[in-house]
Length: 594
Image (cartoon, rainbow, N blue to C red; front, side, top):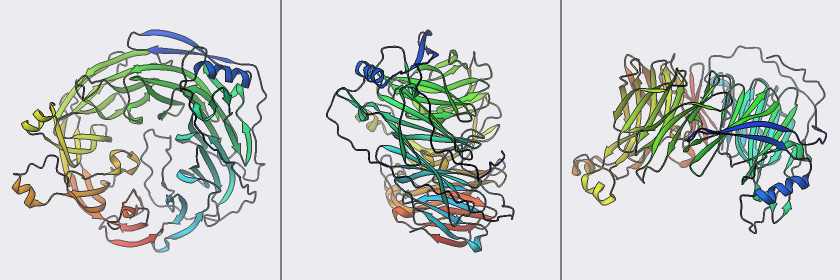
């Protein structure tokens, strides 16, 4: 990707002439009976038409809700400052992402010399390498809002912030890291859902519930703000289906080219969005209602945004890893029914590029639900759980005829699955112990108690006979890790044989265990450690404990992220950045943040 000339005129506002409504053909598929419905996606020709549509199709009941959206005062700086930086960067780790080439925002990023991070809602730029020069270079004051996460792309820093019911995007030139320059800002009404960056293009998805801008027959048009100037979203920028169907949310998709500064946006009246999956060419926006998951496919080509298709599948998804696009097909894993009602089942549906269903597997692990999913090429790996951990290996090489190849049942479950290589998978989750007969009788169900944190290495070389070849258990019941719910906290490097897991460790006194003959069931341990555990991991020795690092025992000492630059391991909490040698874990230094 070539850099654009920084001295080009900044485009401050996108003006799109008001045009008559356009329509896009959309085909929705309901896999349960494979009935195909063809809808037309249309825009509005006027605000009056939008108001009339909402009066007929508003999902929310009329209620007296009061809300306030303060104005944003944007600051625009035009000077560009350069800083020479010719020395090569050492090897460094990157954010753990789902799709190669599709970056995900996070609270911490590095480019191999500097660390960009958010702590206490503030944005810091830290000179991190070489370690003897480590120091804070700048603390960026945001014009408004609390920083959520960020991207770094060469000399461009993108910061996402939220303030009330709006999302704000700040774009900085950080050629001179000690003096970042704000060169673009935009805001849009709604809640932050997620974002991605592909090349120089940033894509933001925000969701605005209808009750915030439509109530009792009154319409308050959502606003997009560019460099402090408000522009109402135009009727021909709002898309809807030409069917009478309740809608509850306006979902905004915004693209920003961080070099040309071009901005595009479109809004869609669809169900409440909660998860996105993004490939190199498409954004899939997912919502769940009445035990059905709806997928909306948005095509992206640089800054262009085009609605492509929609479909429905039975059940609900777990997270973004329940979805995957591969060779033009969309694969999605869902759970139907209730685990406590005893009628839950697990499924995989395969849709073509038009979101027509072409294949499926239904009814996996009855009575259980999906705890983790990972699609890797022609395979899918699923972990379900209620009492034991069925680890499924599923062949998707023929999208029209997917099939289960193998299954492994072991105690515990995995909340996150990560490919080690083509034939091995790392699982992070919890160990479990089966409940006593009297506990099952008292609750009227067959179940197990989760215990300490479990790290497992699975061998799927023979997919018909998957094996657990190594495992470690950390602590007792109550032990947790942010990796269980956020994959970006996971640091793994196969070449370095490095695995770093942030943990809060709880332990039960050995006397109690001895008195209970080792069965602790529902008993929680006491917090004894906050920090990271560091392991060597390879196929010969498995998962081998190397050591651990702590910032202290206070809640603000919890380590949220770790990364490496060269031969230094950096761990980040709200309070500090700590530097340790990768080979010995000996302390090198620390940088206080607050």
